[in-house]
Amino acid sequence: MERDAHMAEQTTYTFITRSVGETQRLAETIGKMAEPGDVLTLSGDLGAGKTSFTQGLARGLGVPGVVNSPTFTIIKEYAGHLPLYHMDVYRMEDMGEDLGFDEYFYGDGMTVVEWPQMIAEQLPPERCDIVITRGDGEERTFVFTPYGSRYQIVCEAIANEHPSN
Image 1 (spheres, one colour):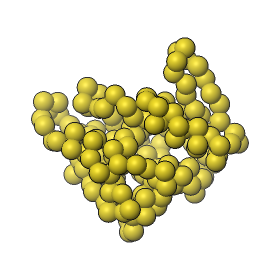
Image 2 (cartoon, one colour; image 1 turned 45 degrees about the vertical axis):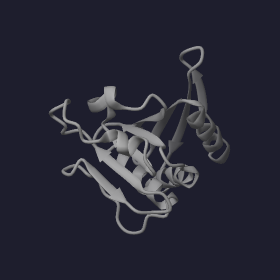
Image 3 (cartoon, helix red, strand yellow; image 1 turned 60 degrees about the horizontal axis):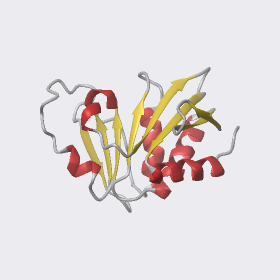
Image 4 (cartoon, one colour; image 1 turned 90 degrees about the vertical axis):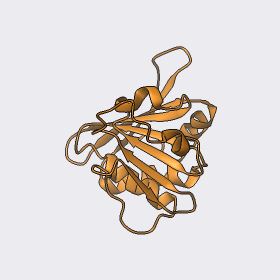
């Protein structure tokens, strides 16, 4: 884990995983700390590991069964000890369309948004943005940018549980 002060007050957290299992364990840690209204955004190329990460979150939330990408449905909902709302907004063509995002962002579960740049203006100001990049083989680099004190606390807790590797 590295902390980079790109801006005076904005800290980022970098985590490296070397397998799908490590990626899922990293995300599971977050799922176990989830609170209603938590919002994470996931950015990364196709195959970067967004779905694997979300599967780990789901495990941390106690979601049973298979979790896969909502590519053709935009939003999938899963029941766990908190609901998981998994959004893939890549194919959103009409930015003016009201899909009731606020009901998810400020609702009773955790929301994960893949391809958040497609709805950037609709995202809540307090959230954690996660950018995933692929390395060699199954290696992935995750850069977390927390917006708001809740997400700063979560990132610190993750850094303590998953120290620099």
